[in-house]
Length: 88
Image 1 (cartoon, rainbow, N blue to C red):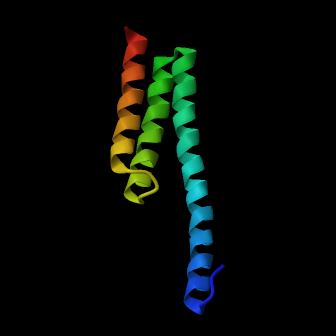
Image 2: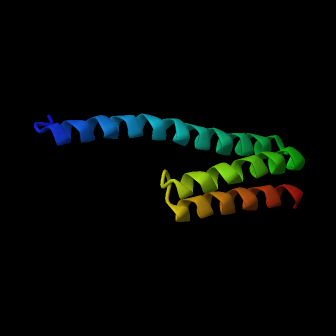
């Protein structure tokens, strides 16, 4: 457990940030799942619309260091690849 005043404060700040980031991460995962659900239903238009809504969230989370920027690029790349396969 934290002993000094500084370490107690840092523990409180870390907990606050953890809760905030958990909500952001949840939003990110939800948007990705919506795209995957649209892809699995086979509707290319709805999948692309869901993708367009998901991309800004993915980029924003990468910018806020919730996820790594390479992971953001990987997520977007994989989703685009799956959407393109719908038309083939």
